[in-house]
Length: 249
Image (cartoon, rainbow, N blue to C red):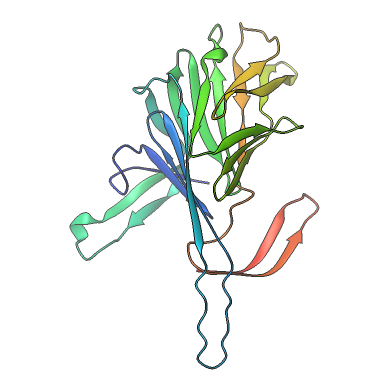
């Protein structure tokens, strides 16, 4: 997964963006905006003069807002990649965007007092770590979900946002502190504050040391491009990774 710095290729409120299969992620000063799409498979035939049926594309937008966050926090790309992004759209070279840097992570410093947040991940899931400095208060972290019809916490502690076109899921949050022997897990869970707002509840931890809270966002229910898709085969490997083989437009 890579993040592009916004150098004019999208809305000026966006600081960084990432594009992947079935989604775009836009990071503003206090929001992570997910633009999601899925499509029903069209019927494709090469016989006679039959034409492929264009599938109905379902689109949804989910806005995750950090409530009470600092809108003037310092935002920077971390772990720059050697590759760059280019936008050659239209016939006017003066409106093109060239050599846009890309990064493996995006870091917000002091999004809450003493709390940083770092976005990263891969093409299947996004992680965002809240890094809580010693003596800082993790109870200040709260997230609202605009675009979700409702939120639900399952028996395993995972979170599901129910959208009109599907679901977006988060694994149970993983919180830990580093010690001499590695990572010491701190029991953590989501807390529903109302139908569209969550916070975190943590067991006792050493407030004199940094704490990391890591919710993992999974795109399990969104797959495909913006037009027709055709799936020819599915396989699962020993690591429970799913491989979908076919064509996408």
